[in-house]
Length: 141
Image (cartoon, rainbow, N blue to C red):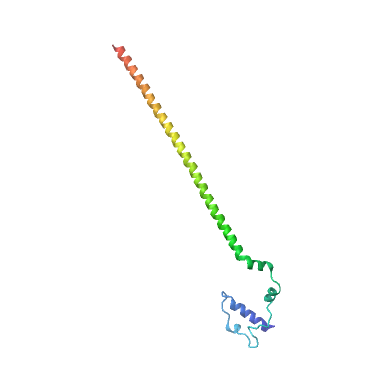
């Protein structure tokens, strides 16, 4: 039983690129053991050859198409979301600009009304001042 363990350990040690190299004495196999034999059955190859997993075969045949479909669906969603977001931002910006223009027009009207009211007050004050001046001049004479 001991000679059969050594080739498995050796093959695992050779496959892993992250392990430090083992000593040469451990890597060398006895001359009576053949490292690459076709007569020794492998457990994993027998299991997969005798019965295949239906999920595995499905994804082996349809996996690429499924991946493409999901990727295109995700990209389409992202493009539509970005377009919707852009259109919504433009609509909000237009609403705000219209509101600002309306408020600016209202401020202009109120300012013009205030100026005309001040001008009317000046005229009224000017007329009152003229009356007071006339009355003074009449009273003096």
